[in-house]
Length: 480
Image (cartoon, rainbow, N blue to C red; front, side):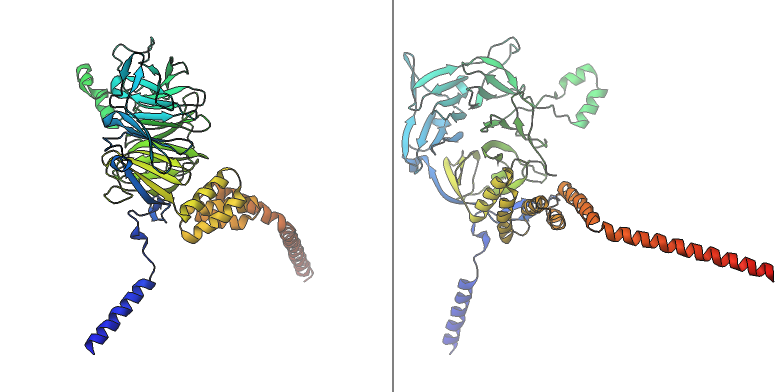
C-alpha cells in the first residue's frame, strides 16, 4: 500500500509540474526596462539566443581576439580576426565564403597588424582600420587591394600627433570618418579622395568640481602636476541611412555617452525621456563600447560592464535589454561588437572568439513593429499593436503613451489622459488636459451660463426684496 501511495503521489507531482507553465527564467538572462521613476521593471524578453559560431566551427581555425563585426546589406558577416590579422566572411547560413589574410600592395605582399575596425559599403568595398600599421586599408569585395590612407597631414595637427586608427565608417558620399586612439579633437574626417578635411564632433570637457577647486587655489607648479581637463575620446562610431553619425564614449560619468552628430558635428540626439540613454541606472554605470544603428532612428548600444545590449528608439526611450555576462549560450565574457540584420542581433565576444545570434520573440517583434509605425506617424495603427504589447507586459509605459497619443489625435481627450498618466508622459498629458477642459467647457457652456444667469437673477431679486423689506420697515416705524 505504501508503495502504491508513493507512486500515486509521484505521478500527481509530475502531472502538476507538466501542467504548470514554464518560468521565464528558462532564458539565460532576465528581460527588464526602466520606469519613469528610474526603477528596474521586469519585462518579457525581446530576443532569445538561437545559435553561436566560433572560428573552429567555421572551419577557419580559432579566432584570436576578434575586434569587430560587420553585417552587409546582403546578410554577409564580416569578422575582423584581429589577433590573426585577417578577415573572415560568412554567408547567412554561416558557411565560410572567404578568408582575407593578406593582399598585394603594389609589388609587395602586405598584411594587417592588429586591426581594430571594419566597415563594408553597399558597393562591397571593405575598409579596415589597420591600427598598428597606422593606416586605413581599402579592399574590394574579393579582398584585392585598392588603396591605403595614411596619417592626416595639416597645419592644425601638432608635431606630437600619433595616428592609430581604431574604428572607421564611410557615408554615402564617400566621406571617411575615423576614431583614433588618444585623439580628443573628435572624429578624423577624410574626403572620398582620402584627403584630411578636419576634426568633427569634439566631446565637451568633463570637469571634476573637487579638482577644479584645488586648481583654483594651487600654484602654477602644483597645477602642472595635476590631471589636465581634456575632452573625452570617442571609442566607436556608426552612420545611419540619413548620414547622421552616432558615436559612443566609454566614460561612466557622462550623461551623454551616445551622440548623434549632424554634418556640422553638432549633437542632435533626441532625448524626450527623463532618463537619457546611459544604460543601467546603478552606481557601477554602463560603459558603451559599440553602437549599431538599425533604421527608423533605433539604435543599440553594447555595454561591456554587464554584457548587455540596450535598444533605444529615436526619442531616446529604452525599448528593451538583452544579454549579460556569463558562460551560457546568450551570455558573454568580453563582448566587443554588436550588429543587426532583419530579425536577428549578433554579438561578437572577443575572449570567447565567437558570434552569438539572437532571434526576435513575439514580444520583441510587436514592440519593433509598433515603434516603427509610431515613429512614422501612424499612431492609430501603432495603438493596436501597443494594446497587444500590454497584454504581455502591463507595465510597458511606452505602450500606454502610444495609445494615449492615438486617442489624443482622435479627440478622445479624457481616455487619452488616462493612458498618458499611466505612461508618465507629462507633456502630452498636459496637452490632453488642456483640450479636455476646452471641450468640456464648450459642451457645458450653455448649462453653466444658464445657471450663472439664474444665480445672478436670483441674487438680484433677493437684494431687491431685502431692500424693499427694509424700506417698508422704516416707513412703518415713522408712522408709529
